[in-house]
Image 1 (tube, rainbow, N blue to C red):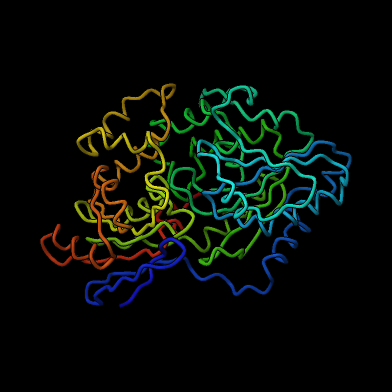
Image 2 (cartoon, rainbow, N blue to C red):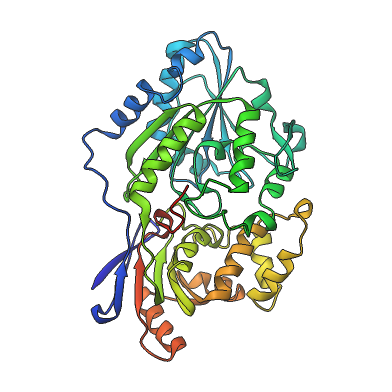
Length: 425
């Protein structure tokens, strides 16, 4: 069987022997779109969940803050931002609108990445890039349920109305993306993000894809959004072509819950165990670096047999994605040493990117991992105790050699688009 695996802006071909293929797992096909992307968003804004329309909330406001995703997310802001801005202007034509790019602890986007994300904005809005490390830009908002300090971008405090846009998909430790994540980690200070992502929380059994109930990371994020006074969200759900297939708008908690329910209807699947699991991070932009691909690896982790092999296809145009993340592995002999050292880090001493390293180490303790990517990334992949292959077919041959036999195969073409287990959210 020829299977196309998302890779960069295209696909990587995989020839999977029929006799060995146990399953090819993908999200359930959603209903055929009857509206255009613009119409889908417009309808959501016209019928907000648990909230007055945005134009009513904006009426009489002088300083409005609109939080949006950064370059690492496939948020279709070229479509959503103009519609949001128009809705705001209907209620507050003379308001000062600031668009704050929620980078969390990611690097700032380049000018080309900014243009690719937003397109030309011809209005009076200014764009500000959040910097979690610039303490002078931060303001204290209280103590999180976890005990950590909540520091957020000062623009949140200075705003008369704070709204956010984002998209909802399964998230490997926050349950789902979207909603409250625009605030924490989106526009939070470094100290806050680090505490929220501590080793104790990351290993918590409820810190998994599709789980919100009892998830301590989610609980901190909800608290942060409330403290920030987040009043209104627009969240979209995307299809496999990264096109808007659904949208929710309104109260940050009620609208997000409705969006998560829609996501779960499509994304939930039954895990099918196999010796070899082949997956991806859904292509660009989420397969730009190894850091982000840990998300796809966790889907494969749910299906691979202990001692098996995971194959992940990713373009890795941005390399490892974080120096600290890279050195957790490059400076240690194996994944077991990485896991051991991270487990000993107290919550208040969490370091940048250790959560991603903790989860990757967990995956690598269960199975070997082969990255299908460009030859320029081979040294990087191997320094992080993984294997390299030039193609999916080459990786499959390597996997058979590691197993010393032809192994059974499960394919998850887009690992970030599915949820396994955990029936209760």
